[in-house]
Image 1 (cartoon, rainbow, N blue to C red):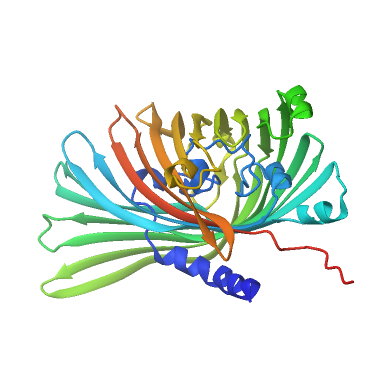
Image 2 (cartoon, rainbow, N blue to C red):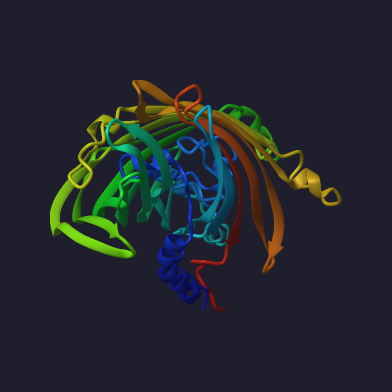
Length: 442
């Protein structure tokens, strides 16, 4: 029954994502929109430490190698809400948005209880995950006016909506301290761009409408590596109750991938003469086949962990946007971007019985970098910080977690358009350790 309900939710999730407004930023005009992070809720609260982070009860698909460290089945889902403020130095505007962030199911294919019952150990482990999440989002509605000699006031309105979704199948394999993983996914979606130009001071009001709708579809992949060093092995050999201290290094790489597009373009002139609207269709072009290239990406990071008490780490990501190409939106010129993040968590005492706050995760993070957009020759910077809490609770006699966090950030500080963002995210990680247990009968 659990699998049946999950399958139904996976089927309706894409339409639910499309129905919600998830961004309202002019920066989403470029490329195929603003890319969604593959770092899940709890990782986002730690500054996106996806390259190096591994956890036995939480899912990390940013580096699929981490799935080999899972010790229980996990279902992870998250939603967010927030607002953004745009400021051009003269005017400002605030808008609210929200959406589902992702739904993911992950599990170890060999339940650790089997080794416990059979009194065996193994240097190998394997984990899998299935994930549905937004890949990119487009959402903006911008109105501007200008004075044109011999014409008068001209009003221009630009509208964008839509985005893309991806479905990922992930695998991770571990041998001793080395883990390797692979994500393979399919990206699909629809994007709409529209532009209206109105000449207000004509005796008979005149408006030009242009619209470009296109769908896109293609495959994507990336691979990952993780290696963990146990720093206090001698102490562990003497006393099994000692918390392990470890340093984990992580690396992910995804090459450029191609996608196909199919677009429709409509160009219409509208004119009011008296109270009558006359529409003149200048051109309609349908089913225009095209193609494009999505940029590759590389992540490298590390984190130091002191058992379950705390983790601290850093991550560097670069995305090769100078390789981006799209026949359905050919005028976008983008350059490679980078992001440097720092963060971690603190957990006072996960064994505490009478003090709940000591069993909680206290997460923090900071990021700084730029995105691939140039505005009047200036790079658009991107920075912000995050705070989050992991709240353990018992569900069907198993420990699970609610994850709540806040983020504050800015894009384009010091440029013509400055965007301030505030987001509240809330998610659940449900764990179940009864999958794949070998049944024995006496």
